[in-house]
Length: 276
Image (cartoon, rainbow, N blue to C red):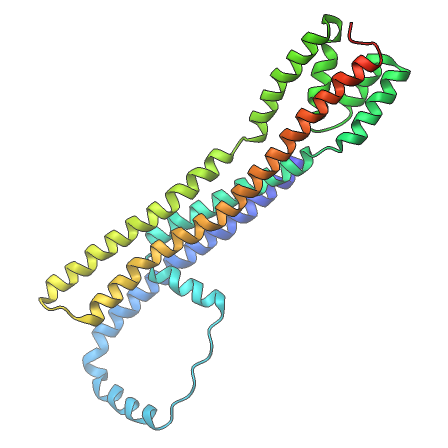
């Protein structure tokens, strides 16, 4: 069930992202086609445009306010769908991994006080075997560590402690799984944005060289479009950094729970004279 929920969430996030990419590509193609048509029809429409401009100056209507969604799509297309799509892919994959980790970590959270009370009761009634059954029927890394420790009871308390420490490292690795990919996307998203900015600046300077004149409007438009990729990369990095910090704090909390619960388990074994 847990894997099904994670799969559905990841599929939904990726489908949304790919739909935005396809929309951006189609919009970019339509924009290029429109520019070609305007270039072909420009000589025939100069007189009509001049007449319409005079009429519009007499009766100017207020422009409708654009929604946030429309503004984001326009800026996404203006920044160039090639680089912006890669940055968006980093956001989609990063969010998918972060959501999956959040679900897994929340499911791994265990009420350690309640678990210790049940283990204490089981040790008093049924001994080690009863405690094993309680731990096996409880999900989470704490219960798994308890199980591994109880399995080594026949070898002495020192072996129980070594088993708890060793298996605790394994559970820590499982909890931290996927964080390296989120960290990777946090690092490369701004880099991709800077790369798009540099390439856009090169294009702006090429346009200046081709025109053989420094046109402020031409330079300003080129720089604006180039900087949009940097803004997109920084936004993606900020969003993923927030999820990353939450996951790190959640993992630290779980690790502290495992350490405290492990010490309490050893105390329970000594209490019930089961350490030998």
